[in-house]
Structures are given as C-alpha cells and as structure tokens.
Length: 146
Image (cartoon, rainbow, N blue to C red; front, top):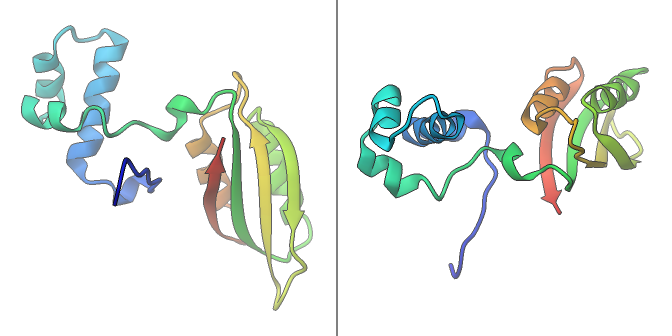
C-alpha cells in the first residue's frame, strides 16, 4: 500500500486505546486540562500511546461541515419508511441534495442519498445512528465524503 489510506469504521470496531486518544484530544481542545500528561492520566493511557496515535484518529464529524456526504442504506419496502428517513435527515439540519431509490426486490430496496452538511447540522454519526435504529432499516453505509 502506497501513501495514506483512510477508513471509516464504526466506533464498536475501534480499539479502546484509540477511543481514549480521541477523548484525550477532546479534553485538551476543551481546555479542561492543560497538559498532555493531565489528559492521558484522565483517560488512563500512556503519553506514548497518545503521541503515537494522535495524528491518525479523529471523530468523523470533525471535518464534515460544509461538505457533501453520500450514503447508502438498505431498507424494507414499507409504506412511510422513506418518509421517516427523509424526516430524520431534515430534522438533523442537513440539506438533501439527491435521492435515488432502487425498485424493491423481494421487499427490500436500496437508497442512495447525498446530503450537504451545514453549520447547524447535527453530528453525522448521530444522524446515521438514528436512521439505523429505525424499524425496517437493515444498514447504513457511508459511500463518499467530498
């Protein structure tokens, strides 16, 4: 593999040490703690772990404002379900740019949606979690971020 490669994974797939690095960075950014040592002590990791991973992990939402993201979801062909998904997106403050839904096969449809993340938009991870928690949604996957 040449160059940097990026992956988007769900929180449950990320090792605990990396989540603690993110939390330590958040503490430093919030200025609740003043030193790296205080931040690493607060989250119970070593300073060497913090320095090793600090530039390699960040929450997905950090660089999404003003961007367009495209995601795909698989859903049951149930009356009103698409409307619920659209309401969830609109309720998060995102601007819906495109929607493409396949013809349902065996009662299941694929939906691809592009949305613009605006300054007032809620966290995209909260948005995806809300959609994925709906009855009749099989999965939500991020396709691209521009």
